[in-house]
Length: 245
Ligand code: FPP
Image (cartoon, rainbow, N blue to C red; front, side):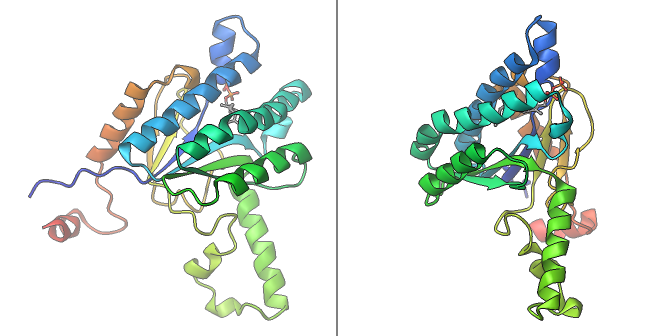
């Protein structure tokens, strides 16, 4: 029997290489982020065409505060502006915007834009776009651990009966699915504290292309590569074969 052609249902993206792309052109780093933003929305469109249901974009990490004050200021202001200009079109496309991250330190105006976009798009079903802003995988784990410890003290949770399923309820977005395909541009081969829990069984795909140069054809290539992988989730190849028959 022919192998089923699988479309990854959840894709996580690290949009890396914006700074290098700008440098190669003698432009400020911020120009790279502006070019990268357009690529993200082209990719969301391509994902809808393919039937992908969820995209998680690493827009600003808990470690990105270490960048120059100018770049941090730009990324904050730009996220706010981007949400305002894109949200109506995304809403028309049936995209549900969901914010993942810590409110601490994040600009209040960015939080308001994220919350307004969430409210506007909350009933959409075509695709969920998880905007990871001031997000860190370790921060998410730590925040979950603190919330569990507090609930244990209040006797709302019994430590011995905690399971993977009940732990998930303490993550930033419990309804979020596990990631099928992780995509990182610019040649760096690491996950950089992105979605640690949700990436446990994810297929990793790295490309040397800098994010602003990442085109739809490169995305299709990543999908075809994914389709060649065998996802075993701890089982053997034979078991997977037997299940598919
Ligand atoms: C990594 O490239 C990119 C970021 C840290 C920011 C990503 C932001 C965007 C694509 C702008 C869109 C904004 C939103 C809110 C979607 P880098 O700066 O580390 O590049 P480098 O490794 O070449 O220096």
